[in-house]
Structure formats: structure tokens, C-alpha cells
Amino acid sequence: MDLPEPHRRLLEEMLPRIREDPRIVGVAVAGSLANGHPDEHSDVDLVLAVDDDRYEAVLPERLGMIASWTSLVAGFTGEHVGEPRVIISIVGPPLLHVDVKFVRCADVGSRVDRLVVLWERDDRVSAALAARPPAPPRLDLQWIEDRFWVWVHYGATKLARGELYETIGFLAFLRETVLGPLICHLSGAPLQGVRKLERVDPDRATRLRATLCDDDRADAARALLACVDLYRAWRDETELSIVRNREAERLAVGFLRESA
Image (cartoon, rainbow, N blue to C red; front, side):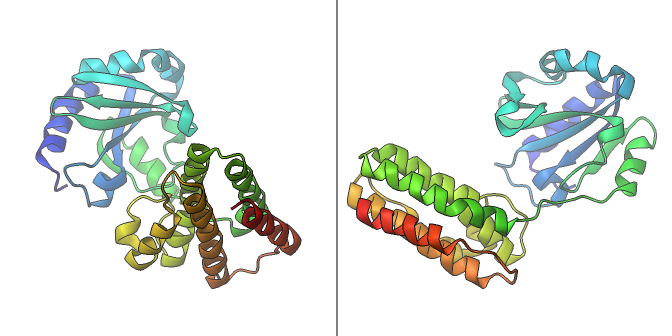
């Protein structure tokens, strides 16, 4: 792989040390390193396949293991992103963001993205990946439609109370959960929230500027209404048939306009 120099040096440092642990069956990279488009700011996403019978013993040792492989600055488990198997860390200097996911060898084939094997003790990791292609997440447009107008009403209540920072945070939630994924869906790109939207679809990404606001009630109301307008426009561009709750849409938007 063509890697930035800090990333290459990190892997050269870590891999020989990881191989010394007999409980580790193989090491793979995911994310931008695996997809061939890393830059100097890219995370290092490692997946470590652990012998199934030794997996439970490894879990409480993960931070110590990483510290023995490289210069660990700080790290913690990833429950907040729904992935407790991951240690999220920074290492260095130079500082690099490194995510290390520890998985049972039997589970290494269950993945949403491409993995590239860097090393394996036998062919179990490669065989598991070959037997099961990645299953990237798909956007459930009905799931969004069923929730969107409830969310709009919720944001409008924050606005009506004058809770501007709550409203500003809620706008970020709508971009991350609804508008960004819709842009990815319409552009045929992997779903990744608002990451790299500037490159995925510059034209639609530019339209998200309308959803930004100052800490001003009128400006926050304008931004919330812009979210509604963009959702309606991009929802209507999709090819799937969506069952719409038109009454919820009418009432929620009406309440938002009254709260502006």
C-alpha cells in the first residue's frame, strides 16, 4: 500500500510486536488505508482477529497490549459508537488516531467495509473474508420518513423555548442522520454521515450551508426550515416508494413556522 510516512512507520513498528502474541491470528486494515486513499490525516483502522478460545481473556488486556506495541497516548473503548470491541486511541508522537478492533476469528468475515490482510498466522482470516463479501449499510428511507416529522417537532420545541444551543446541536443531528446519508444515497456513495460530502457531491454539500446558523432565534428557525426543504427535495429524488405521513408533516412544519 502507498501510505503516508507516519502510517507506514507505525505499521512497521506494530506488526512485528503483534505477531509475538500467539492469541492473535491475523491483522487487517480497514477504512481509507484499505481503500487506497489515505492522507496524512487519515485514521489507522486495524482489525485484529483473535483465537476464538482466547478472546474473552484478551478483552480486559487490550489497552495494555496496544501500549506494548506502540507509544499509546490515550485510549478508550467504543461503546458510545456502538462498538465496544474497538479501542479508540491516539498514539505517537507524531500523533495518529488509531482504532483497533479486536474480533473473534470466527467473526472477522462480518464486516461493512473492505479489509486488507497485513499478516495472518494461517489462512483462516483470508478464508473468512473470501467466503463472505462486505455488507455495507443501506439507507432505509422509510425509517427516516417515519421519524423525520417527530424530529422536526422536537427541534421546534427547543426553538420555541429559546434553547438555541440545543437547536444548533439538533441541526447537526439532522445533517448527520438524515441529510448527509441522503446525499450519499443519491450519489451512490457509501453511507458515512457527513464525512467527505465535499468530495462525494460538492453541489449538494454546498446546499447544506443553508442549515447552518448563528445563535439567533430567527436564524435558527430559518436553518430548521432549510432542513425541511432539503429533506423534501432529496426524498422526492429517490426511486423508492415511501409511505408518507402527510398529516404529521403538515402539523410539524406548521408548528415549526409558528415557533419561528
